[in-house]
Length: 145
Image 1 (tube, rainbow, N blue to C red):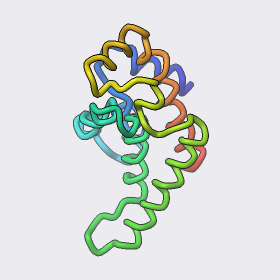
Image 2: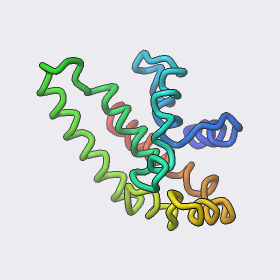
Image 3: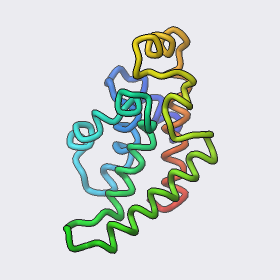
C-alpha cells in the first residue's frame, strides 16, 4: 500500500519532492494541514538542492519533530529526546540504504548541472527516490510514528 501511494504522489505530476512526500504521509495523523507541510518541506528535496541529506530523510526528521519536538524553549527534555530519535532514524536508514546522503544514494551530485543532467538522463529520480521514500516511511511506521 505504501509503494502505491508513494508512486502516485511521486509520479502524479504534482511536483512534490521526497521530503514533501514523506512528511505529507504523516501530516493528517499529527493534525497538520497538507498545504503547510508541502510549503514547509519544499526546500528540503534533492538534499537541499546540494545532494546532501536525502530529502526522504529530511522529511522523516520533520515527522520525528511532529511527534517528539519541543513546543517551547523550556522543553529541553523533549528537544533532546527528539534529537536521540533523529539519530536512531538516521542510523537505521543508513543501515538499510547505505547512506543518508543524496549524492551517495544517487551516485551523482545533483547539486551540479552535470550531476542533475546525469540523474535525468539515467532516470535516477523515478527509480531510486521512491525506494528511499518508502524506506523512510517504513522505518517511521515500524517505530510507531
